Amino acid sequence: MRILPSNQPLPVWRSILFVPAVSDRFVESALKQAADVLQIDLEDSVGPDQKEFARARVAAIADRFALAGRQVTVRVNRPWRLLVRDLEAVVRPSVLAVALPKVPDAAFVQSVSEVLDELEHENRMVRGHTRIIAMVEDAQGLAAMNEIAAAHQRVIGLIVGAEDLAVSLQMSVDDDGLYVPNVMAVAAARRAGVLPIGFIGSVADFKDQDRFRARIRRARKLGFESAFCVHPSQVPILNEEFAPSAAEVAHAEAVIAAYEAQMSSGKAAFSFNGRMVDLPVVDQARQIVRRHQAVQAK
Image (cartoon, rainbow, N blue to C red; front, side, top):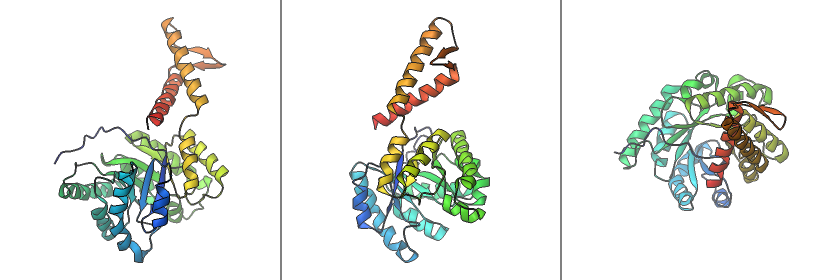
């Protein structure tokens, strides 16, 4: 079996829309949205008595989404007996990744990866095709976040699950309690070279769109690149706020051009629009331009 190289580039994701596997209405609606990723949900939006029904539907939904040109992930269940059955149902070419809830440590990620190895082999797929979005949702996972992010080359992203983490820590779902775990997640993700996914707040809060936009704008400033969402109204906000604005791109390009001109005359630091510019400032500008180009290429 061919093995996917470990240095595959990360995808350009801004919006990851949950789609309950048991709802035809939500499946149809999802295809009309501009979400970068459609994430079929087998977990929280599916009741205990519907797990088997949802599992039986996931392959057809994933294939339909992929045929429509959409990128597809699936959030699976825990504990192990549910998880293994879910993985057996979802490992297929149309599913790019599984969102793995309540990850406690790196060993758990490695064990899941071993199961994925076997299933990809059985399905004659490229080994490593099915990536992992690791969800840190309790105190144990929080303590092991760095190791989780770097646990396996299948890990593509890291996210803090606000609601479950609040239950585990017996805290409120608010900015005070969620700030530190989320900043830790960004650092762990960047250290491991995976996508930092999320924002400070609960994915369940979707009615106040202005507040949601402010949360996403803050998330991008903190280093996040994308987020889960539960309602179609959140998708355009994520797509807009997790991409550089036209003004940001223009300013970044001007900084880069000015730096190159100054470097040609032997200056590595100079003043531009009232601010000192040196290499770190230019590197930030280059990041903005690269992000813009990647989003435009989608």
